[in-house]
Image (tube, rainbow over all chains, first blue to last red; front, top):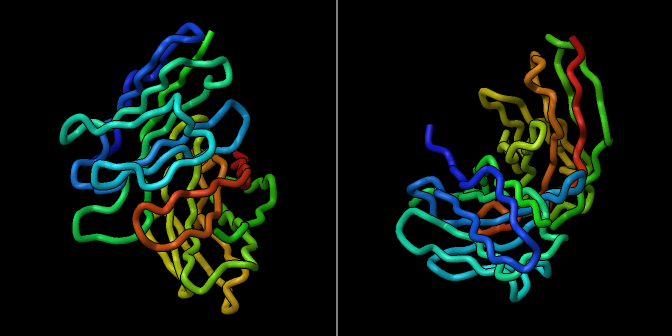
Length: 116
Length: 111
């Protein structure tokens, strides 16, 4: 069964450094998302992406964040200058195969980001 | 998106049916009820969704009241692997719609 994959599984970085989190969505899906979950808190929406542009972003997704689909398979989240409060699990998700509809989103296993 | 309300925790004996309630009294006519679960710190997993008819798939059944103000997710024969946080989310049924997660119900299956 196709699945969303994410790399790395765990990323440790120093405050102020740039990080890139990588995701490979399900191959025929059209919509892509990033969510994050700070330890012990709710899963929070960050951004949605369709047709090579951002569809919606939350207040969390400020100028320090960017997303990109550099080729036909990868979907990346970049944090330009990490802060301690960026420490969280970051989940990528994808949804809706070509010709389909609905909002069943399929999530990856997550990347645990630790900012020191 | 309509707000949903779920009990914070529930226990269920292994092998029994787990019935997880959700209130969504402000749900709009076009919003579906989606259920996801999160096992430990893994990514959320889609379970089932419905609009107004009862739905069943290989994982669970979803019962939605006639007035659509509440629903119940049923795991017919709960196993230890069903221990997770279960989220009930009201969402429009098209792509590109963000999911708004609440705190969910922490379901513990007791051996």
